[in-house]
Length: 279
Ligand SMILES: *[C@@H]1O[C@H](CO)[C@@H](O)[C@H](O)[C@H]1NC(C)=O
Ligand SMILES: *[C@@H]1O[C@H](CO)[C@@H](O)[C@H](O)[C@H]1NC(C)=O
View 1 (cartoon, rainbow, N blue to C red):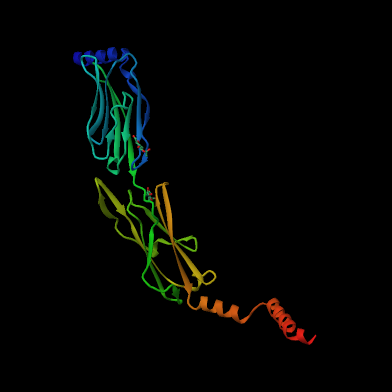
View 2: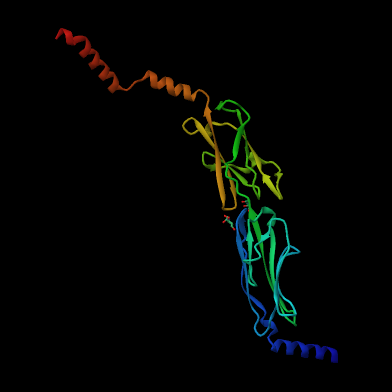
């Protein structure tokens, strides 16, 4: 009983001395960055009556930057190498850490912890940072048939592959700008490939459907594969399927029926050329 009381007495004393005042007032770590970016992460704090002991930045369970006061009162900076994270020590301070040339492997839970001297009361904040690798190329569409002409009842079979990125791109299919029903689509498992310290990903998706009259708009079906990565990348690849015989019929009919105006002009010209010498 006595112990308990002594404990709470001690706690209230500490509280009165401003223990509760160690808190982070502004924290900024973006949720997304692009490979190669330089970032300034911010962790501003208010210590009340306390003095700063340390500011520690971690990714997962590993420190990458610390700002500490030694017993002598001298501030020291510590930089610890983690894959994908290059700290610019000179530009980093007690409340900021500057990262140069960010890599995909820097992706993870970033935390800033501020600790007060003597009491070691700590406040911390975290944010998951995703470092994206955005490709510059569009996705690629392959057809399993060499001909682009289709009869009713025939199957259209298309494959869409996205270029390497991180994370893997999402694929959405459209037929004549209508989003395709999921039962016509098979998403292959994501393939991983290594580039330097980074692991990039490629997605691939298969669209299969039986051609019906309703699919054709002016004798043609427009199929689009759209690849997106968050709100940073949106590229498409297009495939056109034609109703068999449609193109041929279009050409032959326009050749058979020239417009009336042209026929009239032709008659006038013939009349002029052949009759002129006689006039
Ligand atoms: C990052 O900083 C370096 C110089 O420190 C500069 O060369 C590079 O262009 C910067 N990168 C970006 C994406 O701004
Ligand atoms: C893919 O789509 C899912 C569901 O909408 C979303 O949660 C995820 O962030 C998307 N991935 C990318 C890389 O855009």
